[in-house]
Length: 185
Image 1 (cartoon, rainbow, N blue to C red):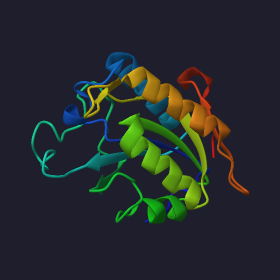
Image 2: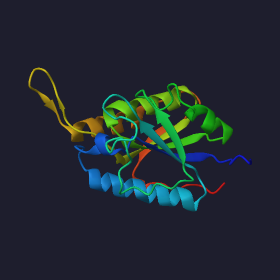
Image 3: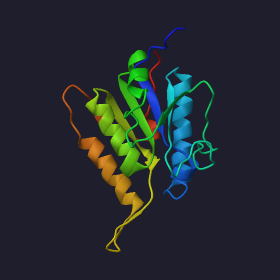
Image 4: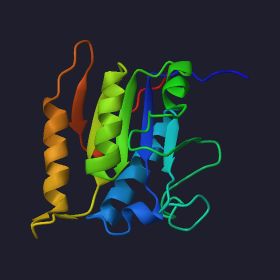
């Protein structure tokens, strides 16, 4: 079997019914992710789907399934996971290395949990990272003291954090979905 060699990969993390049901701007995020999927496929860059399972997202239930609005194809790569980072106890790093991917374009849910953990995990493993600022989402967090952290603030904070992060020998930043061009390999 021939291994596809490419520099960039689109990572679509946990865009599952039970994960995105209460997220802010869900429809726009799904539209932007689909746009990125189309661009990646057109340039023959891999689309890698990460699918979380746990006690609340039981494998096979409707909450565990990908949002039906997304353009999932059977030829895409699927990485099942059980932890926040898409790299922990999965084949993601090996899959990316086998394809000689150096640059990850990151999208999905939820911004403050699995997107943040996956972004840091990518950088810590030596990958370049672009977080798509309008293609990740989350829901508000209600704190025990009655304070609510609004989802838009969580998303904005993560976008700022990833636009300022610096790691030696790696690139990290953010871009909007319409700014991304996947390179033909």
